[in-house]
Image 1 (cartoon, one colour):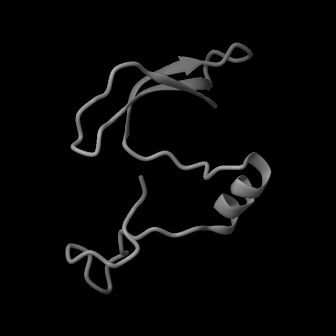
Image 2 (tube, helix red, strand yellow):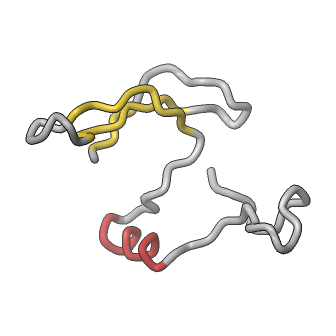
Length: 80
């Protein structure tokens, strides 16, 4: 899922619009990895420490949400 392409009424000018944009870094991520690096409809559940340095984040554990905002079964682990 992604943000809307049209400016929503709750963010009138001069507010920063909640619209879908593709930054050059996102486009580069698609070119290198074959998909948009952004994830939508997730809620963070846990930060795991790095194996090399426990003071740094090594991974993020998240649950995916349905479009209605309900947590779906299972979790996804995103490496840092």
